[in-house]
Length: 514
Image 1 (cartoon, rainbow, N blue to C red):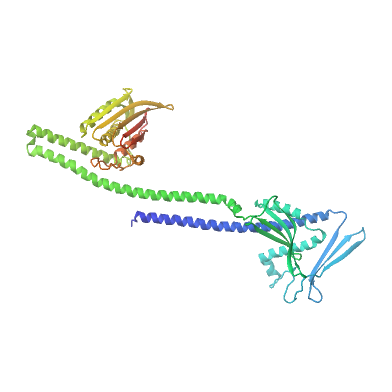
Image 2 (cartoon, rainbow, N blue to C red):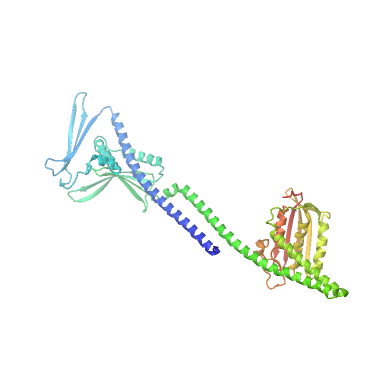
């Protein structure tokens, strides 16, 4: 079943739209995933930087010579079970043999019910430790709680260094390829039991120098001390720009693929439509040429029949008249056959040019006389060849046909009087020598929008009300095809109402036969 062209074009457009939609959906999903991963990496960088900051403090404590300490921490409920208590013991070295210790106990935590609320410093697993360790999310939570436990002991000996943490965080973000400008805050959150209001103290502020968050800025925080409610808060601009920069390679590749697909589909549709138009034009040409072939054959047959069967040959006047009619119709028939042959010439894989040295003075004057004789209007054709013995390397037959087509068009598209100029000269430009042949007329000219198409097969320039101008759009196509096979070029300049000028260039050196 043969689908109409519009349905094929519709299917192609729908396929292209589907590909574009799927690509957009995939890129959107990738963007969201990368953004989520980026946010997770920022939070993880804050945690790792906190851990490294603790390692720095531990290393400093290990290298102290004057003071060493031992810390023990215990948390839980008091004997009555009504209060959550945290105790810590610190041993300081006073002399080489004497140790002094003290115990700090804080009883300022809120009252809780033991049967309903679990302590903040404990992990809870209803299914046992083995099940707890199998849960990766719970393992991550356990790591955070363990890290907070290290903080509880280490912070007694040495307060966290915000400067060190800021430096470590900056280095960690760069290591993870997250080049962001940010503001870092060290915050302490609490609850005043007497006045019953929540407060937040800003202990320290750091980050990128000169950066001021905008109204669109987003924040990420890491609570490193659950008991004291101390947090690090990082504020930066939305991460969409960074994600897009990280996706630059994928976006560029996707765009190139989409452009290639779009161009391919457009070219496919264009080719299908052009093929459809070409087939329609070929069909019209076949129908028209069949009718045109019948006409000269019928006229020539009638003339010869009159001469043979009706004794018209005895009358010199009628004999000459009928013979001239036969001659004209045979010339017309020959032209039609030549156009048919030219149409199929491009399909001939075995086509070869028979190149030889051709003197332009030998072929142009007879052509000019022939066109003067067969024209139905006054024709004046001037010829100039410089130098006079100018030659070209070409196929004599096809060169003659090419020049004949150009002269025929010049006569056909002239007004009541045809004034045509033919000039041939030897040119040299950029160390390249070539022969230039120009055919100029003072006819109706060609509109600018028609110039790019005049060498297309079956294309005919609209002539308005000039119905006497007949043709099949093959003459200039044949001329261009043959000139290119000779290794030359053809171009045209024209202005409506003032005429046209066709310029043919042929290589001066002998061309090899293809």
